[in-house]
Length: 203
Ligand SMILES: [Zn+2]
Image 1 (cartoon, rainbow, N blue to C red):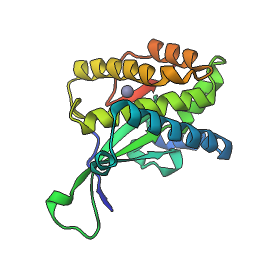
Image 2: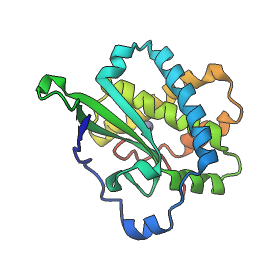
Image 3: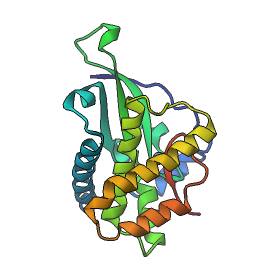
Image 4: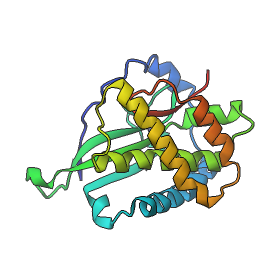
């Protein structure tokens, strides 16, 4: 598959990237194991909630990436995750009709780890489960044209609130231990949506 990189529009806050990368922290194997578990659950409950078929996911594909898999412009200083949208096309197809939307859910390991260091009430698994589910809700809503990737700031902020409510609704039946502090953390950090960057880091 080829992925055409359509640049994201607002990276003005991505300052001093090189020094930032020097001090960056990344997920280790145990973090990734938690992430794999969280992603499997998030994918299943989100698909069930929206009653999605396999053909839906063939039209709107996505990948979930940690820091080591991100391109430089997908790394940011203040969000725990963001969604980037690209055009994908199978390598053996030249026709425009073969183009599909391709989303990269970009986890910001360094910000997630920093937040966990700062907040005793948060723990890794419920935080990852929330983040991945939340980002997949965005992907579903973009792919069903219920939300536009490019939208005015007020619309994005309203969409953030909606996605937050949906994410809580999706996860509530699971009774995940220690999820409540994550929900509260998000409630406190909802302000200032930025290009669908999510869960801002407290400073
Ligand atoms: Zn969001």
